[in-house]
Length: 113
Ligand SMILES: [Zn+2]
Image 1 (cartoon, rainbow, N blue to C red):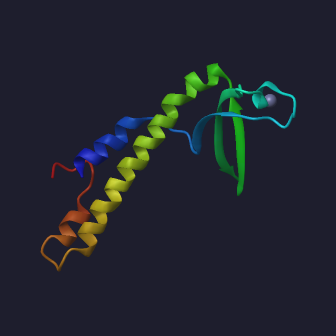
Image 2 (tube, protein in one colour):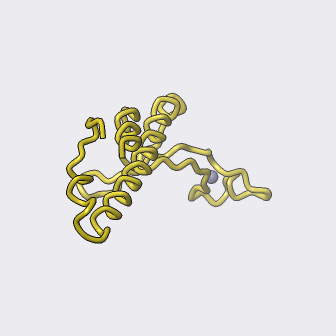
């Protein structure tokens, strides 16, 4: 628990959504991306996230990608830590009766344990 809390505190800024780097074919019939062998466009970095219930995809420039990459990495770390924390909490909640339950859930991240 303390390790997870420390990890959460250490991560820092994080961006929502997912970063995808992909190459693609465009709609033009006589384009290099449809040649043999094909030379696809990109690869481009695309940032996909939900905004107001809609999925929004934005292409990132190289400079933006360099700036934002660590923030996506942070978000992934946070999700991993959150999953660990939830697993741990589930284990406590579902553990058989009384003995450990109350005291473990009451413990705060900053407590000395
Ligand atoms: Zn093309």
